[in-house]
Picture 1 (cartoon, rainbow, N blue to C red):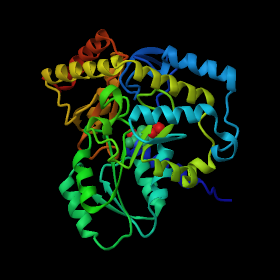
Picture 2: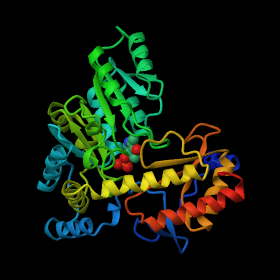
Picture 3: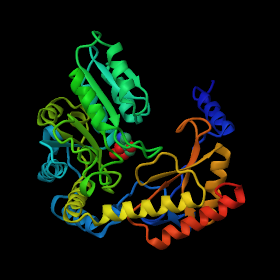
Length: 394
Ligand SMILES: *Cc1c(COP(=O)(O)O)cnc(C)c1O
């Protein structure tokens, strides 16, 4: 009998030969300014834990108390018997935090996109999508059956051109963009995209996974940053990055959140996030509403680190946020750089094709409010030493 799965061996061998096999690092500690990898404590510059909330005592305490009161699981999909007062409370608090009409939560940011896009557009419709949009937007768009028109990255003029070309071919149209783009750290010109949407009477959606807790007043996100409240129909967010937990959210127009409660398939056919997740998210909103301290520290850390890297001669690309790409070009060099940083006690991952374009390999340094000045200085020293060894930097 032949092995029906032999093709997987071949594919895996091929990935290993071509250097695209992904070896997953494993931590044996909470997420924080440092983590334990292979038994060694190293400074952590890999996580999306922007505000250090993933192991914040207030979140841990809220999760623990909620479990004492409500147990662990939601018990069913939300539309049947899985909605708890905690879920509704989180939605109310998120709408207030985002200064919009309403919010609905999902199991993840990925699911929020998979739920929202097919609920808004179908086969007769059109999606206008930034060419660098996140995989979950691409998958949600494909699932919708709508025709997908890609426009040049963060380019409102090209968006206008693409819309004009598609004129007359669709019933409804939806413009979708990432808020912050996670590979380069740049963000969408949302004010310009909204202008184009008004001109052509299109719906607008922004996925602010990396902007929530980061951009805007006290981390209220990209819509708040551009003061576009009420003008962006759908703002997708995640609780898995700056919020430090797990879950997704759609905030914006109340008609849309009501529609998603009726027609969002991951809402109707998959159970809600658990009790401790939900309670921890509520504690994260409390923290963000109480003070801008963590968000301010995140930005101060990012500005310091990026300025020092530039002084040392490193190219940090076109970032506008705490995401700090260190452009190295060659993928082998980037991997070598990352390995040597780890030897120096600094965990910062290399990204190469197909995650980023060929020849644009980089180390991506994720800055957090959890990092102390000393942590940042240690990382800068490590970059300096490795850079000198490998002939990068000054
Ligand atoms: C991380 C990310 C997601 C997925 O969020 P999860 O909550 O982890 O599923 C979706 N969209 C963008 C733009 C992201 O960066």
